[in-house]
Length: 603
Image (cartoon, rainbow, N blue to C red; front, side, top):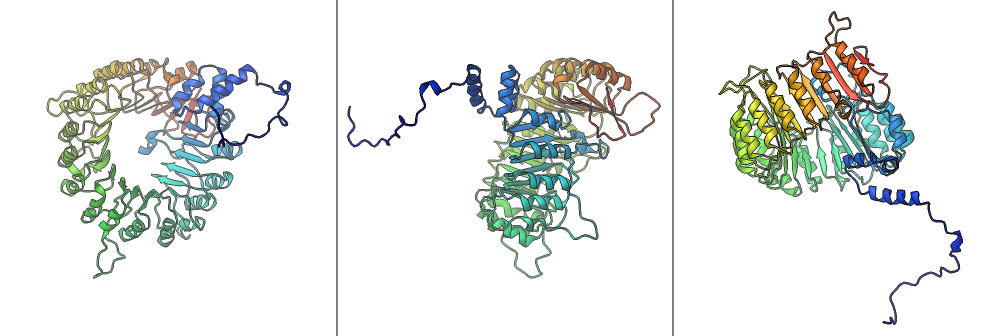
């Protein structure tokens, strides 16, 4: 077959420039395999798959390290910054977690640690090309944020979750110097206020002039006013902005203006959602529903701080497309929730206060058939209070929302029957956290322990990886967990168990357990020693107000030298051998040198 007038491109004359065959060198055979392996590993995105690949042999470990661009450090003290940056040399995105979760409940002493400064210095030297940094429960200063802002020319994303120690000046430095910034998310962090005699810095005005690259701006936790005119200009010149979550200093009339400036938003945190002082008496109220109607891409709504329920109808135009609704700051009742929820047929994630009562949960169950995640938070955590949600609400959710995968449910009373019903109706549950407020509360109808309910959850929910237990529980409940919780990775226990045998069931029966949190339970040294075979495979273990002794913990430290055992006591000179808190985690490096006096690291 001939080709006349062929459209094939002319090939360059290679004969005059090609090297003689004798000069072409092929890479050595072992290097060929490494090149192939590196190209294959680029397609592995799951960090657990990559971890598994790195354990095959030394060459796989080396190749995996060279191709990893996204690094996750689950405990900032598990590995030193120098070791991490020496092994993984091409990282562009880094996540570092610091304090354990119980820091959120003020169970850690002040200045416990998790300082970012050593990491910041190491990152600045090793990764000048770093683009993304996610920190959780870390302590960082304005100097640290200045270092981030000035060390990484291509920096695009900063997410700080439950962090502390920094202020407005540090945020301003990031805004001013990171010209390619796409994400600046400050989530549940403590942003330090300026001194009373200092004027609050206008950090919003620090963003460079001209069109920005911003895709996400979250500052709900910033407890100071913002320059609204500068914020409005910033939103107007951010055409790629999809996520905007405002603090409660932004009023609902100001929200109205911002929404008209950014109709492309998909995620919105409303800030304050009540009458504004800016509206003069006699002025016509703005048509807030028109702003929500204009944001046709909106799928996630949150905020609603200082809510006035009379304004809730404004969000009706957006409800039909919502997949996520967070009302965890909105003290609304069932009657106020129903008109909203009855329009949310696509909802997959819902966070609410228990003020909606069982009646509100019934409306959710009747409407939200595609719900995957539900969180019900308490408005009142006093043990003697009568809770507005109960087993009635939990059971009706299980009957109506059968695609549920994750639930966090605070209540004052619960029955085994309701929990068993959920285990049967929602077998795809991955996360089940039931927090019965009040110590050692049995089934209120049968007066039996809650053993059978939690036993049914681990038996019938085959995909379960996270479990939080509460109420009156005997060792039998932990026997069920050890027998059937083979995929459990995180277990939280409070005020539960009879004896050491309960914890032994868990440590000997749950091979995938990574995180174990226990407080106010009767487990002692014998229970702790039963996990010697498994502790190296865990990320951490926390035990507070249990029956551990310093001698028993010291024996663990001697047997497992690569574990860090931190003993935390509020009293410096204790007469007895019992300890208040044990925080134990695996570590590849020497014990940390920044522990406060109340922390003793056993060796």
